[in-house]
Length: 409
Image 1: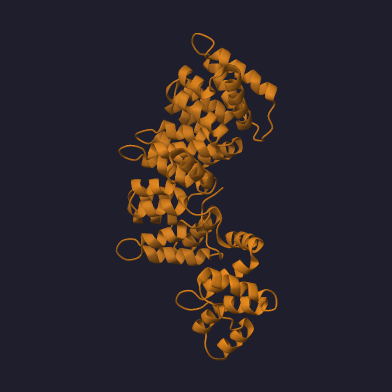
Image 2: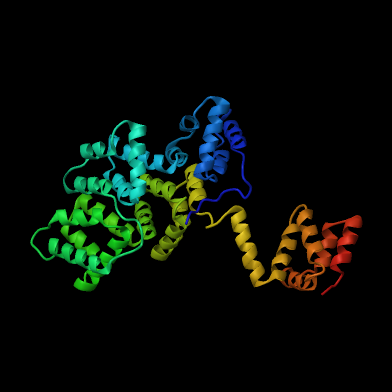
């Protein structure tokens, strides 16, 4: 489940593009405006904004952001504005072709994606960078690690939930024979099974391995393999068992101890926000007894912190969808309580939402106004009549009070 919070009313990509352009004018950049817009738009909306920006100003928004922003905030934002598959391809290209390669980052992206995602990713990589992903992997990796990545990229795997328990048990025995049962390790068997089986099947294999040999498959992998090859196998296995648990662990490791691995932190937050960040947050809190928001807040600062928190810590639902779900839930629990809350919100703070006030009073007067008044007094220690009297005037006040009644408690 995604964590991205988008506006309750559809925004205009053109207006967003204009607002962003204004944020770039003058000395420095109004990063607050940039974050308030781009951190709250989904991938489709961001693509439309980029189109509008180019049409209006004959300039690429990605390039403009790269000149206006700095540091980790810039790195995170530039990845965020890309479409998801282009982002993955870019992360891979940067990991494989930078002066200092990030083979574990590249391995994570490859081994945590579905076969259909990998297929499109390979095509996009070729289109963006003019070479095959497999070529760059061959140039930058070696040995069993290279064989695993190429096999995982090249083998079409089933993506559904169905599992044959007998086949899973057979694979568990094969892995045991290839590893812990013998002197030395048959890496080819590990590569074949881990690269050809679905996540659902691998989760079943892990359960069968534990049942048959009273030892976890993860421990077997750790004892029988090493280095980036081990890392790749563990990434596949952990994502098969719990993608959210895997990414929670990556985030914790990125922020643990002295210093922060900002590359890993950015990679996970920007790639998972629109997929399963809510589950990752739940796993993070369950494992480490601390909210992900608290961890990010303590390990980052400035606009970088603001941006990551805007992506990572919003609610499971947003906008009109959230409002609709809450309306159904609250009316199911207590219609009177729901409308009492609407009335209180309409009259709270500076100004009054007369549209909401009128809507509730005129539609509920002949249905359940007495119950609403009782709930209002119970919740807010004030009669509804007093609140209406204080927030309205003239004939408008007289009319509403004649509907509500002047009951006092």
